[in-house]
Amino acid sequence: MKKITLTCVLATLFCYTVTAQISTEEQPRSWEKGISRAAIQLTPVVILPFLDLETLHREDKELEYSYVAAPFRFGYSHEVNLSLTNSGTWTTTLFSVE
Image (cartoon, rainbow, N blue to C red; front, side, top):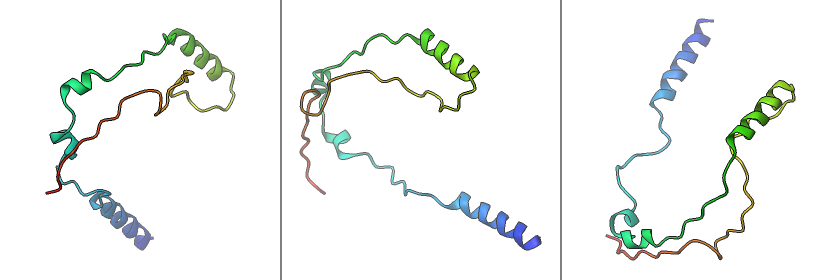
């Protein structure tokens, strides 16, 4: 029993020291030299239709009290016709590798 406890404690301590990504405190090059404020202001904005939160809350409560096994709602789908070819803007940043 002592070996199992010691193994669990050591494994827990080891997990606290392991990191998944090395942080170099650098920023992407496009943030440093890339997109101008004018280009950002010219980017088109799509405004989606009004979302009736009261109705969604009511539906969630009804589902909660119906005892049906369903996942929690974390978003709401809007039908849109947006793609890479018909919306947005492309910006190419030029920089030299140092």
